[in-house]
Image (tube, rainbow, N blue to C red; front, top):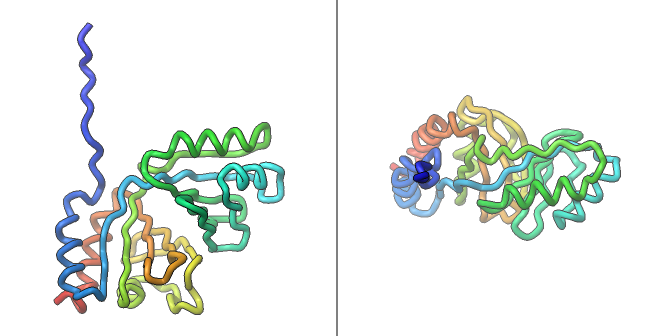
Length: 201
């Protein structure tokens, strides 16, 4: 029997906007950097932070799950974001979903745990450069001053009337990750490009 399966290359939600993002970055003269970071592995984890599974999962991942609200822990290629008292998002390089899922499940053993691959649910926008905070402040009600939202912080918030997870990277020069649902990624990109006109001309 002939193999009729059709395999098509993955297409990111913002593949159509790559050139526009790059053009805005060039036009800003280095003050703003905009890019998509497509296909990052994103695993949603829910478990008892005081149970045995929390420590076991942290050991398996090589990083402790953060327990302070709205904080980020990073080790190697993995980043864990605090989303709630018993909920985290573990972000890693593309293609790591199955490995991460199995490591978390095996570490949890018989302890109650929820592990869901949400990688296809969102894409990630990088917003960096000296004016990145000012750009984000145009459409975000959070206090983005480094004293209030410095490296290692994250928040579920609205940006340009779009629900996002905003992450201040651990190196200020690395800027911010904006994790946005794929269906709203185009709208948010248009908003960012429009808001950036102040620096891109």
